[in-house]
Length: 172
Image (cartoon, rainbow, N blue to C red):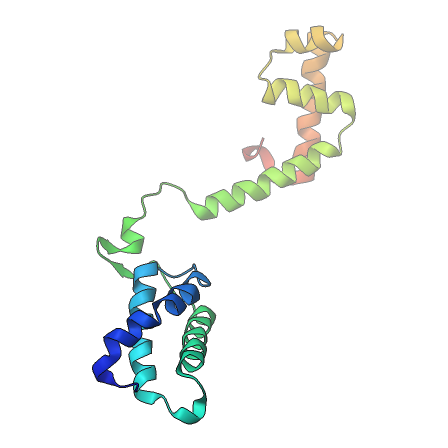
């Protein structure tokens, strides 16, 4: 007979079912899930009616329903959620300005697209000058140009890029 007095034995008998069910839901902390499953088993003992079929089948459906339902309603965590060490937002140490990072990313994409519009030689001058940090003399040697020509082309390229950007000298 299934009753509350022999609940401990029933829980022990159905522990393989409980463990198998919990393994299907790895998102939950194991020990906490086992405790929940034990409580659900006690509830099942109290609610069980013989018309529901076998107790094992009834418990299996109750456990599965509980954990599937719990998966559908995830716990919402915000930066204001309390933890043992304080509020989550206070625990995060960061010097990153998210807004600035997004703005820099947008500027980077805009610069990349602007550079794609340049001819190969102009793009190479920009790459060597600003990304490889080479002097005009070295760029001239590599490209077979006079350093003064490299300097003049660089100035013209920057002027073109500023016109495309339409933001003045604070970008480049």
